[in-house]
Image (cartoon, rainbow, N blue to C red):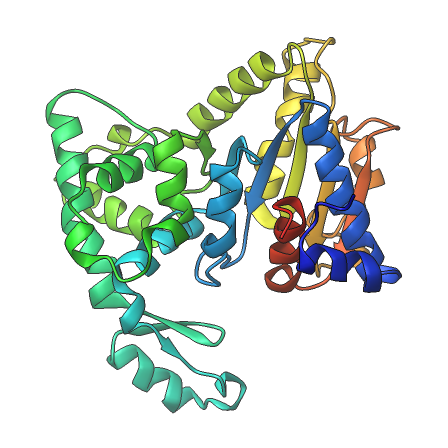
Length: 325
């Protein structure tokens, strides 16, 4: 008896060839990993939080289908920004027609555009700034240091943002992750609005750079987590987009195997990437999965999938399949 819901059955019935078939194969491969007792890393690049992936990704976290996340600083903060400032976002469906003057007008209104969606600076960035600064300062005064995501978890779980909530809390993947105390890796966090704001306080002499833990410390944390969690099972790698969110964590395997000389380190047990990057341009993001064999990241027999499509379309469908929707 098929326990899948209407969306999943539609996918199985009609997604039969090319990228559509790759989507189904990847979803079933992900399902097989979980059934075998393996864990899964999901990496988030691009503007997936602003695309409101949290509406379904949060449920993936709650149902224990994601065990660690690697994301950009932008995705870390933009889910929380959407939580507290959703009604102030402005959609610009005709964004392809905007002139430089139109773009300047948006800037003057405090609207920072991401494709067809403008993030409201005052309600989103500044609303978080005073609360996150307080946590940074308290940690520093106490001689404590935390990772960027740990500060965000503290802010969410403290309840200080509750008065601002503008979406259903169950649609925030960051809140779901905070509740589960899910491990997160945020490489290059300084390349984000909160990272920029933190840097400004460092430049003004109000905070020390060391108060927020670094990317190297994220790598060592990930290495310890990977080692511990592959003692009796595998870890799969589900990559949404490209960039540092994917490139950083996947390197933990060759780092452990080659640089630490732990030759019993297992390869990633599954790999899937949703990408629109092109292989021929020499990009790491666009590299076909087999190229990763040469870098000691994937094994010859690792299940490998690449879906060359729009992640905002593909990821929710795969997650819906995994949630039996």
